[in-house]
Image 1 (cartoon, rainbow, N blue to C red):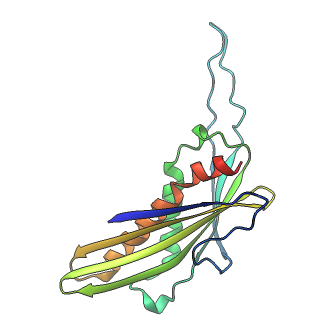
Image 2 (cartoon, rainbow, N blue to C red):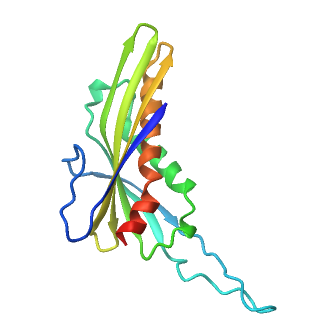
Image 3 (cartoon, rainbow, N blue to C red):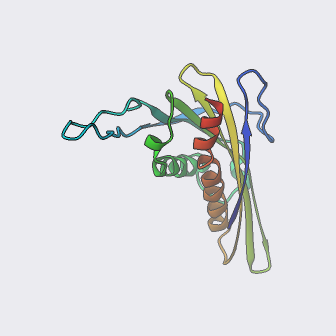
Length: 182
């Protein structure tokens, strides 16, 4: 599997455009990830000084799929997207990102296709992740894309690999995109 990522950072004064993203993201899950408090060392013998960004959060607010459920071999795309996005958000050390405020992330599967050529199963997926600040202003939209190829008989396995790769590609671009947009 080889993820291919696109990064779109939208300045606040410009209209945001993203590849193939037209549908609004529907609310279906919330995950709150508080930024860990990091203590800075104080003068010799003095207690540590608490970090100022201890209350910052990155929240998965919405997940959605623009893919027709009949066109996939996976049972519930939004549940898989939610689980994968939550795991990817937890894997990021948000305490080191220098966030200025809280953010809400909306994730959507914009494309998922699969097919078989002989014994080879191929799947490709695109996932977008939109970030809004605490006031609801759209800051950035990033897209992750991935392709998966494998030998076997279950297209669902290839589709899941492509989906998870696309989620990884989108979510792991968020810290850089947020820093640029702040």
